[in-house]
Image (cartoon, rainbow over all chains, first blue to last red; front, side, top):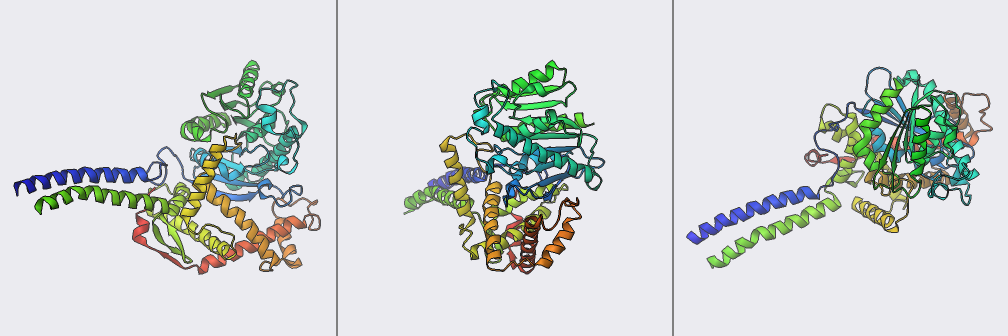
Length: 298
Length: 216
């Protein structure tokens, strides 16, 4: 009996240990994700309302019924008081793919800092015009173009996308009162092809729709940084040094040119990171991106 | 006999542990069912997916409100899944099957080693929306084909008048020149009406106790 009691004690002890392991094992099986502190993540200042598929310009005739090339935007609207700084986000996809919804997590997190974020779809020229040698990788993987120009079809794709980004600016202007946008200056950002569009719109397009107050460049580039002028909008760049699609040389060239002209430029070369390191940005750099935008849109 | 029982008892935690582990693994993989919408099972995994979207609307820490927002979102989605299933346009018999497909797709993308212009892997929400939206595009075409959606000249004219109040204000936008865009807008509206109608009639059987256990 003594042995039984002892064994039972041991059994209970083993059982307790097993239960703990079991419990922890159960927890470990849960998908990892956001902190479970409460509905709104701890580092978020504001709730965010997402309004999807707002038409900012007429449905383009040239793209037939391709909804991913349609001129629609998703608006991430923080519940902040007063005039909202505005950031236009242009998704990537090599001008032949991608969608405004693929950056939901990043846009929501930026918006939760008090910035109205507009994630936009735009005409994807290379999706509808298959031109050999026009892809971003064919033009940008090896480094800067020796001639300072891209394949004409790629350049045209950038310009077409920029035209739509400027239509977004028009929409911001005409809806500023409705959504409490601060339209005095706007920020533009994007990843990859979206960053190329943002850089072109801010530094090369000579658009006059709305003044650009800040540019956040995620692994994009300009064919010729010589187009950047003195007093150009401040630039914040993130680029992986192992990017096999758009060479990190584009980031260095932009930063160097901006600084030579006395413009504001901040560069993060992310060690060991390849193309489209969105998760790295979402987990580490959102506060910095938001602070940069806020500072330069004041 | 006692010795035999003791040995059995010693093995009990291991047996129970194994059973619980397997159960937990299966439950996590398949997702526990918290109820049904339009007869389709709603898993805890799906509720959580929608809670992650809804959480941004709730600053006061009210998790129950977030769960309710998630269920509301799921009604819209399940109604569409049901429609798609009826047309053989939704290949996923269970949500676990969709998650398996997501896993396989992401693994294949990684194994391919290609440089992707967007995120290398789909998130659960991205993949679900990607599948649903592609299927809905085909569904709308079918509805037009078999006249479940009909766009009349009067519909076009009424829709055009609505659109003239928005980004089609300029004179250059005429119904004749932009008939395709107006037609597309009519189809979108008709589809939305169908879904809204089905949502209002949808049968929802959600187990409140099970729902309350879904955490972020």
